[in-house]
Image 1 (cartoon, one colour):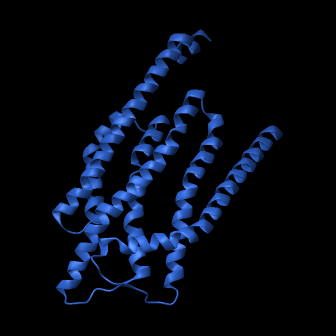
Image 2 (image 1 turned 90 degrees about the vertical axis):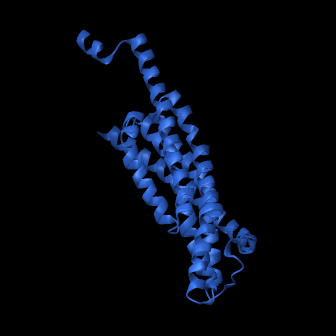
Image 3 (image 1 turned 90 degrees about the horizontal axis):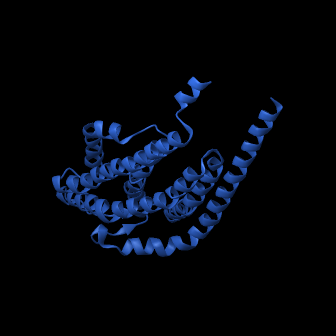
Length: 258
């Protein structure tokens, strides 16, 4: 019992140490984010997405609020691979050698898909939303002027969810590796998944058929990609089990021998 307590304490100590490392990287990146926030804000303001609509400050604290938002986002993006790496280091002792090597590839793949999702949200979804909103403002005869805090807050609320949605293939592969999901189960619920992703795509875009299609189709392709990757992981698991049974015998056989 004492050994088990010490083991739990050691695990908690290691977890705390890794969390401190992640927080330290996040704080350093957050400080650096204040330096890079200015040029990034200026670049995004010059992008033709807002269709030349003036971006103004409506409150004395708007500039600080926007700087904090950008610094936090830069810090989070910079700390993401570090957090994933320390998570992998924390759980890797409980994995087999092949599982340890295979799961390590999830880290760069997750970071890449997160960036791709953000770029898709910014260059595909956000312009459609802004054009629709600007057109709606013109139809009621109002002069569009965007508050800088509201503009970038709306931008983050539209773009960051796509970075999270694009993690779907990685999540599916991980759950398949844990035997929680398999390609047959994913294919069986394909219609329900399509419906849910279509609802998400329609909800995040203006009520216009072209915009809905341009967002929904990539989400459906992500789901099909998830099934394909799950099938690869599942087949690899079956081969590993077959090799194990061929070399050591099945679990049921061992139990009968005992």
